[in-house]
Structures are given as structure tokens and as C-alpha cells.
Amino acid sequence: MKDWDKIPSPCYVMEEELLRKNLTLIKHVADTAGVEIILAFKAFAMWKSFPIFREYIRYTTASSEYEARLAFEEFGSKAHTYSPAYTAQNFPAFLKYSSHITFNSLSQYERFYPLAKANPEPVSCGIRVNPEYSEVEVELYNPCAPGTRFGVTADQLPDQLPEGIEGFHCHCHCESSSYELERTLQHIEEKFSRWFPQLKWLNLGGGHLMTRADYDVDHLIRLLQGLKSRYPHLQIILEPGSAFTWQTGPLVASVVDVVENRGIRTAILDVSFTCHMPDCLEMPYQPRVRDAESLPADAVKTAPKEEHVYRLGGNSCLSGDYMGSWKFDHELQVGERIVFEDMIHYTMVKTNMFNGIHHPSIAILHTDGELEVYRTFHYEDYRDRMC
Image: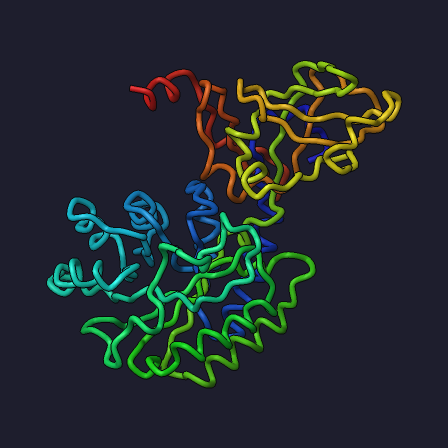
């Protein structure tokens, strides 16, 4: 895209060329290592783009009834499903839409496995295990933190697995490297490999950021090939989310006002961090802005005016709906486009309509340069969510 002023504002714009680049790499890893890599809807679920994904992968992973139904109806294959808890009301739907179902606890297995066993169509069941090891530093994203509600530890498993448990699911990464996976595998095998002969599959979860520029893809392939050679009967599954849509497009916004208080200038935008980029506040991290230099957050407090350093503020009434600082090469003007890089994963799936804030449009920039707007949002979308 050369002229961002032609993009409706605000708008998420996925770039097909960048998406296909990621998908090609992921397919190469899967084919070369002999594993299955599937798309985790928790990070990305823009279903109108699924025809592109289906050229490269076959399956997806779901964490809820709606995600499982989306897999079945829009992706065209049953989901690999894991949920922290199933209920009597939603479990029949999970059975309908899932090929694999992972239970979070033995009590959930005991309650719902009889229904899975009686299901007319076979469903492969598994249990989530907790290796009690993770290198994720932000506790909000660490599923192995002390007191976690996720998974079964090795000391809780009997020598003979319960009937129908065909797989283990383990998730303990977040935007991690292959070397973190290598160290994690040592803990998984040390604690759980004695049960591997009783299994058909091992799901290594998500967080494998193999499309990041500095990721050692060859090392990942060797790791997975080694794992396969040690346990040739196991189907190895990975279910990354961010890796599929990492750096595949921006969120385009516009400046609607510039305010100043005690020397701090804030450019107020037609998007919101809390509504449209919540991961920035949760992780937290300061996203890259095209044609701007990212500075330490407090730089805006002391920067002279002629350096054009700004906070960027959202348009909600939440006091903390802002981030900073960014340095521009000019004074920002009302109506000017602000392009937030890498805003396709963990954005649309987490957006909300707090304050009735206008939701960004969703579009794809095709390889031929055509911009296709998949959807725009209107008052009725907000009203129907509030009733």
C-alpha cells in the first residue's frame, strides 16, 4: 500500500502477500518435520480469509463452543478443542464440531468422557498436562505459574491412563523461540514420557513464533524430527496463533485532535488502545508506528516541542487509554493517518465496544493491489450487543 489516505479510517488491513509468506514457511516446517500445525482461533479468526489458509493447512484449534462451530462451518473441518471447563449445556456442541477434545482436569474427563464415548462419530480425547515449567515472564500469560488452573501434573496421573485418553496437550509458551521449546521438551519428557506408549498424539500447544525474523526454523525442524524419531507412533501437533499472522498488516487510524497538558502533547486518535489494541496494555508493549521513532515511555515528558514527540491517545473515556512516546519528523495534523504496525493477531479477536466506540473496518489488501473491505461496523452492531 502506497497511499494510506485511501484506506478507510479506522481499519485493520491484512496484507495477503505477507500472509502467504507466513503460511508458506509454516507449511514447510510441518511437511519437513512430519508434524501437524494448526491455526489457533484465540489469536486470529477472520473467517473470510479462511480460503487462503486452507491452501496450506487442514485444521484449527478452538477454545470455546463458538470457535469450534466456526472451525466446522467456516474452515470446513472439525476443531481440535481445548476448554478449561465444559458444561452439560455446551458439551454436545463440542462433540458435534470437534475431532479432538482435551480435558483440563481428571474430574472433567470423568464427567464428560462417557458422552464422548457414546457419540455416534468418534472423537479423540486427551488430557492437558502441566510440566510445571515455563519461561514466559509476564504472569498474565504464564499457564504454568504456581496455582495455575490449567492442566494435570504428573503426580496426579495413574500409571495406567484412564480409558479413552489418547493424547496429551501441553501449552506453556508465548511468542517463544525454538530454544525455549527445546528446554521445555526436556521437562515434558522427563515428567510424562512414561505415558507416551499409551498415547496416539502429543499437542505442544501454541506460542511457537516461527515466522519471527530471528526464529531458528532449522533448529525447530531438527527438534521436531528428533521428537518424532524417539516416539514414532505419536502424531505431533503444534497450534500457534500469532505465528500465522505475525507482521501481516497494520491498524490504520487518524489524528482527530492534539491536546497538551504540562508540556505533554497527546495526539488523540479515532481508535482506542483499550478497545482495539488491548494486548498493548495487557502485555504491555509499545507498538511500532510507521514513519515514527519509538522512544522510552517517559520521553514525552521532557522532549522539547520542536522534536515532535507525542503520546498517542485513544478516544474512550478510560484515563489510561494512551501510550507513548513516539517521535515524528513533523508536527502532527488533524486528519493525518497513523499506521500501527503488526496489528492483525490478538486484536480483532479481543476488541470490544466499550463506550460505544466505533469499531475499525476489516479489510484485506490482495496481492494484485486491490483493497477488499470485508466489513464495516455501524450503530446497529453496538445496539445489538447491548440488548
